[in-house]
Image (cartoon, rainbow over all chains, first blue to last red; front, side, top):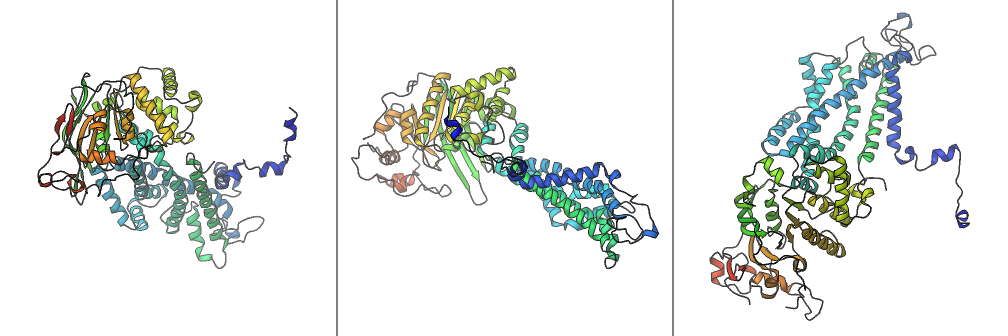
Length: 295
Length: 338
């Protein structure tokens, strides 16, 4: 029994040892950790945005117009004297709503269509894929703008327009994965065991193909926030005086030389959010692969 | 022939004492591509009796796997079964509805595949994959299903089944996965098991274990077995009867002993000559000259004639059908290499 003590090694203890231990999540999957922390922070901002914002985001105060960042207005004010920090904070739930919903709806539709198309092939596949080709033949942005032009500007219409256009990406992605998966032997085996098509699709193929779509979706959230901001910049998104990051940037454009902070700070908010989702996507890619990176 | 026959063949008699379980008649499977239409299986006829092991032998592309998959109607686009009948227990498999087919698969006929690495779903635990098949018969409680799963795992020789059931496929070795696959395939006690090259992807020691396991289970459950392989050694070890396929057709069919001792077709002779022996009486193996034919441009007459040393004008022009050359011995050759 005495031999056990001989093999004892020196284990560093304390805070540094805790932080640097290789089993900690930030050592094992730094992307997921960083993305998670950023998104958690954003989530807190969304939950408490009324408490965090020091001013009313739409209250004008012309005495305080175009003030540089100061102790009173930490990110400065815009041309109507509205506190920029409050506006950016209050815009967060809105932009995130667009980002997430404009991914969730296309994801669901795309997975559904892609699964049917890839699994059954033949005439179903031909019909869906020609539809997809038609959408792809159109420039993405032009299509969205024309859809909004028909439906009218506004947040919900932005989500609707993006859904109508971007499900094709998920459909193609999932279809490709299903085409590969359906010829794998485990799907054959499931067929030979007498399982129904529905069961094979949902239980055997879906979990194997959804990963790619989810990872792409996490990246797409960042792109959709940018898109919503671009539409806001064009005046097609959220209508003033409601704050939205892209719209704020657009408003600040004419004051770029004198009041740079109006456009720069919401830009940074977009970058942080986008980076958060991109990092999360990267981290998820490692986690969702069963028996993947680890080991 | 310097080929050692096994002293004991598997349990069932090779003569026709058992009733026929499956009859395949004049099966034709075609693959339609943009460039050409390929007849992968052209008029294949054979039958499997109860408790019998039938070997389906041939090189790659000879149509043996396609024949095997046709039995469970697993031919996927661009392939299609265009002719013939498959009769299982007096039921025509080719005319079953979708629902009937799902009841037939797994319960009556099941199949194991070549590659154990891809034949299990990577995202599901072994337990879920085995129990899922048991849930198809909805009489049992989840607890009973779990017990059955443990029993099955023991039966296929997986140690500590209780723990291993909770693991994922990537935690299993190739041989163990093959065992798991066999467990799922036999879980509903099918009467016919199709084995599509079950040992090609595992190394020889495991190969031997898997074959022994299959024969043991066959005996235990009284199953019939269709063994698709390109390895005549495996055939000699396991099969009661053998059908040799070449270019989409059966060219010789008889019981295993006759095939090894008294083969009739030159192609079979070529296969026999290319089996290495332990006694090094020959220095070189004699390969069959030439290549298997392009299935899109099949030669006229006997499909083997361009590679056959005995070919005559008759072989080059006329179609050579399978004919009886002995007791339960069929061959598609007008010559006799004996």
